[in-house]
Image 1 (cartoon, one colour):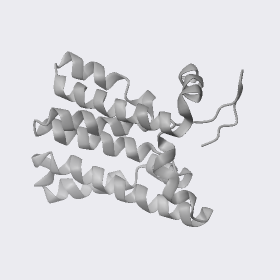
Image 2 (image 1 turned 180 degrees about the vertical axis):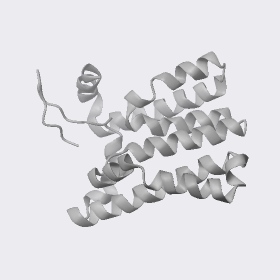
Image 3 (image 1 turned 90 degrees about the vertical axis):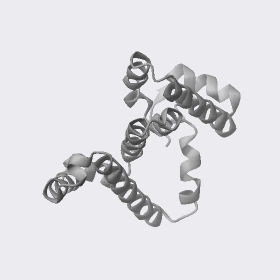
Length: 173
């Protein structure tokens, strides 16, 4: 999580939002290789869960075994997936957040959709456009869910780095 970038006031403390640190606390106590393998298996599980969510929400795909198999094969052979797994990135968490949001919106659960979208904030630059779409489509409950989740993550960030360091992070982003 420490970045090799130098800022005016010193070392850039985070490549990710501060609250992401809390996700990795359980892995921090493990030896590096064990933590890496554990995170890889977690990522695989999150990917399969997101894929299952997307396909189950689309009956035309879910009911067609051949199409479902082809999508599954294409998904697991997608090269960026291997890159994410090799580098231990957080992109699969974003994928799961989008999948949960999609399913919740399809079921008419706007607030849950917004909360699910909060997961995508592990990479905030990847979620910038979607709130605009929700605003345009007048999904007020989804926006309220996203705002609520953002409030929780802001509080978690303050717990991790404190208010003075949060100013530095806001200056970065």
